[in-house]
Image 1 (cartoon, helix red, strand yellow):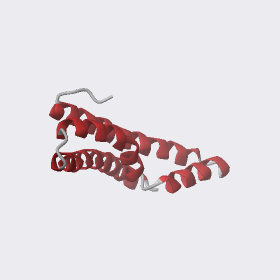
Image 2 (image 1 turned 180 degrees about the vertical axis):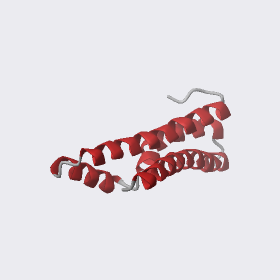
Image 3 (image 1 turned 120 degrees about the vertical axis):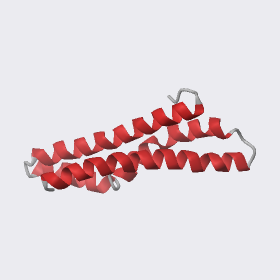
Length: 111
């Protein structure tokens, strides 16, 4: 992975995770509204459940991450491990930003 492409991936992973969280929570709350549940309360519950899936969706599934870790461990390429960890942290940052935005929207803490 070239250095230039790596920074592109960092930004993309951040916003993919952000979009999965916000989009999934907002659209999911429409379903709660349709069946008569409280949409804002359900939005918070759904955001809690979507956290890990937003990270997995952003990094493109777990097999790529495992392959990069394996390459780093067995081929001695520690830079691949560091890059993969940074990409996961970038996706986690997108999730945390989305949680903050959703907390502002529903006016309750999501833990």
